[in-house]
Image 1 (cartoon, rainbow, N blue to C red):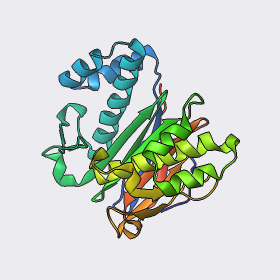
Image 2 (spheres, helix red, strand yellow; image 1 turned 45 degrees about the vertical axis):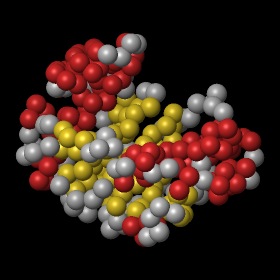
Image 3 (tube, helix red, strand yellow; image 1 turned 90 degrees about the vertical axis):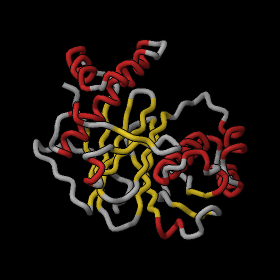
Length: 250
């Protein structure tokens, strides 16, 4: 595990993911027309149909780019064609690789918000990633009262107003990454566990009423994907190293 001050590097031509590593990628959700077309072709027919159902062109393009990059990265790690990849989802909707690649143990997660996507990859351990665009027109206090734990809400209230919006989104991203890693979605109420939220303090899972041993089982980490974005990564275990890569749109 590493601290929250990432350097987002341009990856080498040949990239290897070892069992003791976690790779996180960030990608812009805007692309030149030729690359957008190429990423469109990477999608399965079902995925292209799903993208076409978005009412706004901007949302169609963002979804297409996000999932086209995901397929491209998975194919790169697995040394296969994007069209050979198939997915399954558990009963809560968390996706995973289907056979024959399920046997590789490669785990992944995707999150996107506004104009940025984050991807996380590792082997043989559960993982969740989240990114949130820190909009200023959000009723932070009202949402925190209904979605945060009592301890988190109290911590938020101790902060000056100038820091509360950032703290709200840090908390939200950390909670989302945790429930995504566990793979059970909102069947785990957000009020049943506590995360740190004070800006410039380390990200940490503080307590869980749902899983008493969670703080020794899951590592929670801040990600810094860019200005105006909050990011978080939750990984099963602590015996791993983080590498952060940036996808370059050509």
